[in-house]
Image 1 (cartoon, helix red, strand yellow):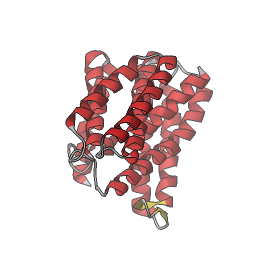
Image 2 (image 1 turned 90 degrees about the vertical axis):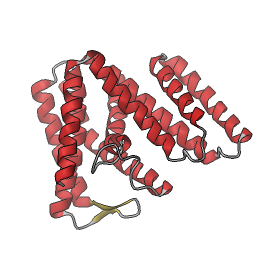
Image 3 (image 1 turned 180 degrees about the vertical axis):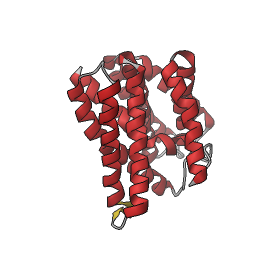
Length: 254
């Protein structure tokens, strides 16, 4: 637990100032997390997939991040066709690989676009997302540790409990509401209420979603870059989902 806490503290010490300061430090941190996540996604099958596939995915993520919504929809259609061409042309690229890459590219693209859309309203709103997401995870961990008895989904994540999930939702929602009330003034508070109640649930769905991927590929972690935390994807799996959900709220509400 001590190593886990120290690693989380070190990550916060790097990420939080860059998010508050903005500019190039912020962009460097964001693209580091996105590109490293992309590599960890690729590394699941790096013994089978050629390296050029990873560099193509980097180019696609950067392209998708700057396209308008109409052109992005067209790009996704073309991507799907191109991936089917890969399944037809190469034995090493299966229909399951197509589904995996298409889903992860959409997820990372939406998360990246959400980061920059959120920042257009203010950097403190992005910090709000970090607070809700990571305090949901922290609340779930301690609630499960002290009160957990009933398994949440033993097939996907044997250690998670219903009590931990409820505790995570309470801590995440409460911290989000308090943070939004005192610090978020550029977005409607009614939206922030909905967001604070919804995001802790989405956060836990993201955690379980990536746990299911790891279980399918029979890996413990996506990487080892963070001691006691695994890889970047292991650390931001929930955040990717809360970013997507917040993106939807912003698009609908604003």
